[in-house]
Length: 296
Length: 186
Image 1 (cartoon, rainbow over the protein chains, first blue to last red):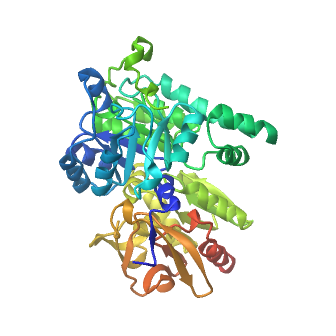
Image 2: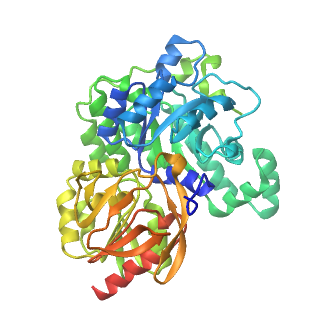
Image 3: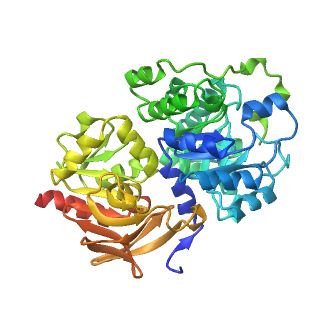
């Protein structure tokens, strides 16, 4: 219908605005997608292997089988996201043709291009991209990302990198707000980001897109901490379906994300949750196995 | 001062708060039953309707919200909020069932079909965002207050205003002004 204009920056960013305060869960089957939806997830990320398994099995990680994505889309009514490799614009074209609701250009998969990210402005489907700091977030937004997630270290169950990245991004935004006009030119140079965007953020004190956090969230308290630190919402990857009782843990993380400022609710949902994912300490990971360092 | 509660379990809460405050009223984010008292109006925002309905149940808010709406308080329900108040959703009974309307969720399709459009009201036109929006298939005996071309996208029934879109994403103030007018005559 001509009265409706699709693919605009507003509607791309708008979907992410509607996911705020919610939990996006990694799922590898239609059954898991259903469990996630029933638990109150605001969206699912359809993939073949959760990051913990990608990490354990090694090898090249790629876009999921379209058949799997179709099955997951058919199983739920909440938005379905899927991952493309960094720089792999044809995987992104395929995911757009499958009508996924959001594409995650993700460091969790093996990069397809070590220089360029996807030109996301050329797509009608919105993209979410990872970032470890403000400069990286602004470069992704310049390329057309309609949502940012702090990277953390996926597949570890160790929340420390997620903490570091969300604190870094929000701290750098606070820093910008205190700078004078002439200092912002240098800030743009140091952030390796366009001056106009840097100036806008200095004025508004926030990113122009929604900021979620990801990578290592495994407990209700982890999710609530990310929200208290200032995230708009949370991605949980391996943390749910690698735990002892996925249904209950998924519900608990959703509730803790809603009532993130209420320790009594977090205590209540954390009771008798069973085993969390075993996890790996990020400090024990050799540098080549740190996914957050992919992307630039 | 007029106080408007925005149900804040999940979704586009902040934008509604900012719009209400820009119109000179007070906005509070409502997550608990105790916050439902002393409100002059209620906004049920957009977000994921499945998620919001599950959180309403999980935190035992269904009965208190239903009682508040039954007390004839002015309500603005947008997108997911409209779905939650509809009598029939996708051919099945709705959640609160206060609006005599039938809606289909995600009626336009996946996110690729999300769009901006100009909504025509009796007293003006404003741009709005339709994000994985529902469609009002049958507006029953409610009053039509907004259309895109000949499609009904906003209705009023008693003290409840419902819209299938997001006025809050485009700073469209028409529905929020109508909500505040209802509090004045309530």
